[in-house]
Length: 447
Image (cartoon, rainbow, N blue to C red; front, side, top):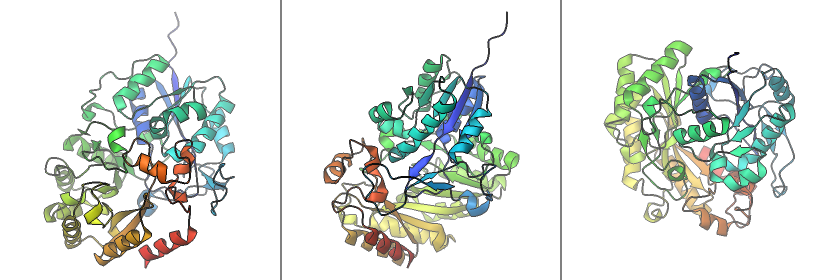
């Protein structure tokens, strides 16, 4: 009797459709984590990245430049319905459609295709990707997961073109759901509450590795009004410092990686038990590597000792989750930071040797009812502290505390179509997008 054929699973990272996009250390970690577990279970796995900056037909880029960041290839396309009035060009970011078609035809026929999704308003890129997959493999089931599929499940079922939509970002539950669809159990040898039992994401499937993203904690103890972290990850999980250190050493020694990017929502929470041992282990290992913290670290956890340790370990980029300097009226947003916490953290980081261009503080702009005066004031406060203000334009997100307020304050029907939540169109400003306001704020942050 002939042996049963091993199923072949194709995993796909889709195109982005937007007014602007740039690779600020972006990686489909969840998809590549899933790929690693599929391989562990003995399945054949291949990976195709529609955003691949290093495609063999694309203009060459140095993966080590800009600490691993860089521009995507882009092609101007028509604006989606409802956004024709926005005075900006709209583009597909990623490889050319004909390159994708050729790459698909060169691969073995997959038994299943798994597609991920990120920003909710990027769903047109997901839809186009799935259509391109169907053009080559019309009879292959397509399963969609990821953030858009979770936050906007009903819309994804109606509009994505996928055969199945898997909601949720709990890794073990996702594996169980995908396994049920493809008829194979995928969650064996995993402990749902112990991420140390999970495999390392399959970053080796990428054509080159310019940086490695690290996820050392899952979830966040805060429940900020503008953030969906508590919905996407209802429970807080944390890896052991030893497993994190071992992963860093592995990628550095076996793949020559120098730049590591923390994707955590709560890296510095309970730093004595988590972040400090990680950074201490890196210092003791003698590795010459760089770390980047772009995901809004919690300010009140930073003291002089931690700042010095971060600097010694190789932390190069720090982004603080400030959000607003209107400290007297921020309780409806979050309870993460007080004015004294901010100024103390900045002093500690600067005394530890961090330069102005290495420290940035995120400031939210475009929230419902927010005045431009308050944003401009925040920019000035951050600049006066001697670090860099970084504007984060507000995106209305379903299942957050601010969603209903955003929906009611918007001139767009946010609930009907996620395309209208794009922060590039200032979706919660009744007067709509203002190019003049955008330029004024940009000049303030740069001056």
